[in-house]
Length: 266
Image (cartoon, rainbow, N blue to C red; front, top):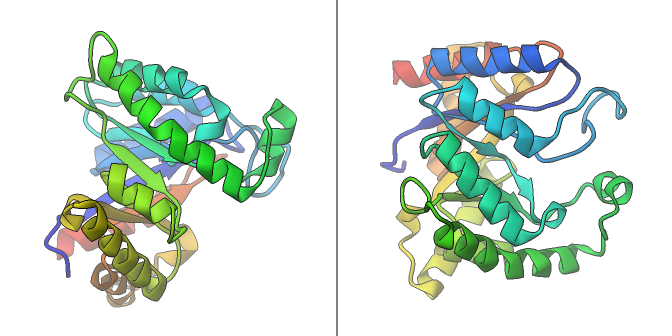
């Protein structure tokens, strides 16, 4: 098991509810003791009614910065295709100051075709989106670095979501502080091994990169022993950051409370 501290996060998916109810879930999650609160970067709901209520990502992150005082904040993850990379870098630097240095810049190459079509972005192919993502990362980083004033902590930490083994995980090794992966423990273990190999290639200590996964309500057992066994398998695979996701209309936090109780009992 990794010696890195276990962290618990909350993804408040900005769909199917009111802003006030979502904001209340942020405040309550911080009170419960989460380490980070994220949203996502889409323009339409991903689950249930595809035309239901939905709010824009970065406007909400600025509000999240004001509504909270301790937790790390950000998007899990920002689609690099939706904003000019220089603009995104300056947005991130600005929100970093609004939050007094609590922003993590979560980024990914994009995949939800409806967003692209409805907002006039070129969807392209998985390869063209990945290459555009690769080329945009240094631009975003440079824009954050040269802005006046600079980021509060000197630089904004970066999270990258994605599991492509040849390109994406190499980009994680080169640029990321957090890797967000998907899959069962055996998949996460394999991806971590691939990421570690890329770290060796680029001269990076793999211990510098935190590994996170998403858990929905139905993936968090009520039985404490069953929950411990389930999460221990992910810990053994290399993941130490567990992020609970929920949606409107009420953004329930039951599973989040079970995760926090599990951590407290260890």
